[in-house]
Amino acid sequence: MKIAMWSGPRNLSTAMMYAFGNRADFHVVDEPFYGPYLRMTGLAHPMGEEIKASRPESGEEVAVQLAGPIPGGKPHAYHKHMCQHMISGMPREFMAECVNIFLLRHPARVVASFSKGYENPTAADIGFALQAELYEHVSSLGLTPYVIDSADIRNDPEGKLRALCAAIGLEFDPAMLSWPAGGHPQDGVWAPHWYASVHRSTGFAGPEGPLPVLEGRAKVLAEEAMVHYDMMRAKTLI
Image (tube, helix red, strand yellow):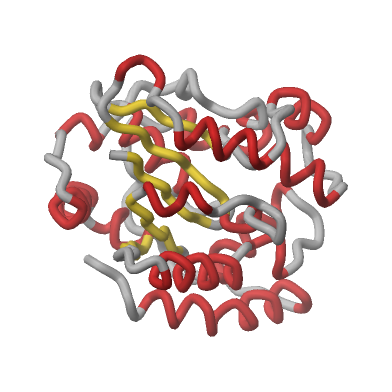
């Protein structure tokens, strides 16, 4: 089984990668299209040159790798994807061979968190519209897209992960509930900039508090993303 987990930034996506990466039967991949995305857009991201140097492949080469044999002889693979990376021109054919899961987080939380590490984000940077588009693409292939919300995972990690595994036909492994502190060998080179809190963790954090209060451009950005979030939230599996 190859799982493609489609998320936006600051969305529990790294913790989910660690959960699956702590299983003995999974190989994990961290944001494989990040390098090609930066090369295609010319965007200046934190550690951008290091990212491009570590991900020199074109999008087509990445897709071939993802569709190929799973490294290490593992029976399963978990691909952590950022929806905003899948701009026009990125290949999508490999999605037909994956179990596609969409990981949500409330836009206000995403904008508040992402803005701490990336100045003046745009709608394209946080990926809600592309997440909805990718969901419709999976549906158009005749496949079942699965939707989960990070808040639900944090409220009940074991219960929700058990339900997710059951839905996709995968046996639950208690190893998913914790992991060693300090990161994962498959972390992207950008980990020092973005992964500090999850590197200190050994499991899922508890429920989040009240929504952050946003002002100005940040508030408008979150409000514009709500239409996509609400549409996807209505389709949550668990």
